[in-house]
Every structure is written in C-alpha cells, then in structure tokens.
Image (tube, rainbow, N blue to C red; front, side, top):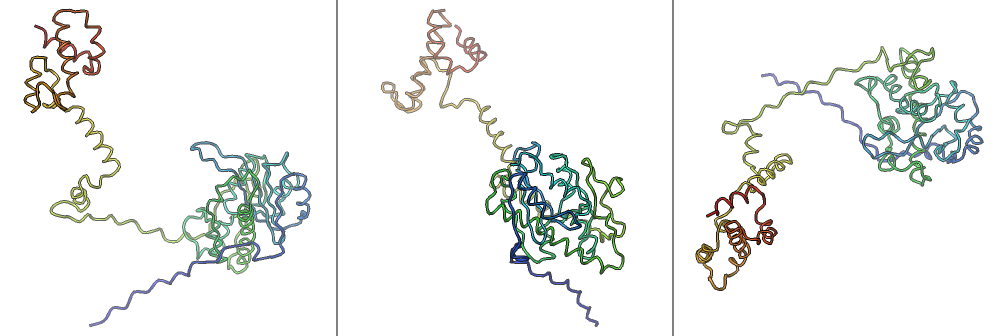
Length: 384
C-alpha cells in the first residue's frame, strides 16, 4: 500500500518587527525644522533649491469628530529628504509660503507619499495649490514588487505596512494621528510628523532601486500624476487613473463555503442554542423587544383583587375583614387605601345628590381616576 506524499507546507512568515522606525537612525545629523511663519518658511525652503530631487510628502489636519461635518483645512505640510525635515504649520501663517508653492508645482521635484492622490486634491481644495510629479508609493510598490503584493492595483497599502515590509520597522500611529494639528506641536507630534515624511522619502529610494532589476521596466505614468485645478492628470494633461497593464492581481480569493448547521433533535444548532439559552442571554434587539412586551403586559393587566377600585363605603369594612385587618384600627394594608375608598364614597354621593362638593373632590379623584371615560363608567355604575 502506497503512503500518500505529505502536503507541501506553507512558508513560515517572517517574525514581526520589534524596533520602531526613527528618522534619526538613518542620518543622525538631519535637521528637523518646525516652522510657523511664512517668512521663515521661505527662508528655510530656499535651502532645497529647484534642481531635480525627491521629497517625502505628507499632510496633517485637525480631525473633526462630528459625523457628516466637512474636514478641517490643512494644518501641517511635511517635506523630507536625506538632510532636512520641514514641518510647515500653514494654519498659523498669515499667507501661504511662496517657496512652498513653487516646490509643489515644480515638475522636477518628486513628491512621494502614501495616499497622495487625496492629499494633492486637498491641497487645491484648501489652498488652491497645484502639485506636479506626485508618486503614489502604494502603486509604485505594486508595480516593482508585484510578487509580494496581490489584489486590486488601486487597493491602498498603508505607510506602516510598507515600512514593515521594506525596512522591517514598526511605525505606530496611535492617538497622535487624531490630535490637534492646529495647536503648537508637542514632541510626540513632531516625532510622528517627521517619521511619516521621512519614511516616504526612504521608501521611494528603496523601491526606485528595484526598477533596474525588472525584466520589463515600468512606465512612470502607472504611478505618477499631476494635480491641476483639483483634477488628476498625466503629463499630457489628460485625466489620469491608476492603471498598470502588466500588473498581476493574482488568483481571486476562494469563495466562502456556507456553513451547514448541525441538527440537534430536529433543529439546527443555532436555534437550539437560542432556545436553550432562553432569556438568560438575550441579544440587544431581543432584550429591547422583551422589555416593551413586558411593559405592555403590565399596563394591560387588570386591577388586582387585593386593591379593588369600585368599593363603596358599605363594602369597605367587608374588604378589611377579608384582608385579615381590624375594622377599628384599619391596619397597614387598609390604611394604604383609606383615602381611595373614602374618595369613592364621596364620589358616589356627589353624583347621586348633585352636591356642590364635586368641585372639592375633583382634585382627590384625579389621582384615582386617570381618564374621563373611566369616570363616566364609574358614574353610570354607581348611579342609583
């Protein structure tokens, strides 16, 4: 008898990184410039020049926690290369820096980032600034490293995921990403913003170095675009869309196999567990329904025999004796309803004799007789 060959084992995934990403690890002498005025921004950005170069790019703005409310305008623009990290808080500036506008519109300067398609549109929406030579790092990674990344070509890849894959570093986000970027930045915000822009620069350099190794060099139009008047266009001015004819998305994911319920005494396992649990573990919807059903049953429940409402003064002592109470002392139980029975007796006298005491007793009856229709019924029943 032949022994079947063992199934091939899947490759063991690499261990998760434990070291955090830090811009200071790549260049200890890098300068981090936090700028809050347009005059200083123009002065410091002049150090970059206008020659061809690569800049990591990112934006931050104050989050809006109201559902359906529009986004707040851009508060912080981050640029980075090997020597400089610029944190430009334009929300505190009196005007948009002219040097920054020139850099963003310079087609010789690459602006690389994750989610840069939406960021470039937001720059025009909030500041009316065009952007040229923008590189989407997610599309670049899928283009030059198609064997690693499968799925739809335009499915975004997060910055933290790319940093983990190519730099084997952690890029934690946490609560800092939802902090107030319009206020004066603290050390955590400066570190967070610097890492995001610097990681964009490092990733572009790493992915760009993989292009010469490909048998069929990709076209830059597959991952590069311009933003003009809020629209994404190619270098010829035609509308641009994320498209790569050579990209292999891989096989589609297998369809989900419907789970067959296991029968337990003629009923499926799920319904059996629900019946078995009963009201001990109700779902929120079931609990809500049961609460209203219970309230409705309580409201529709007829008056108890222990608290009759139609007793007149004559049958009051009989009820007290049936309840095991003394007719002289009235006990705790009968004392509870003394006012009610006395009011009923006066109510009978009022409607039978037409006394002027009716106006005096209306207030007493209001707490006992909840509606006009019930008062009419009681009047008809007690009428001689």
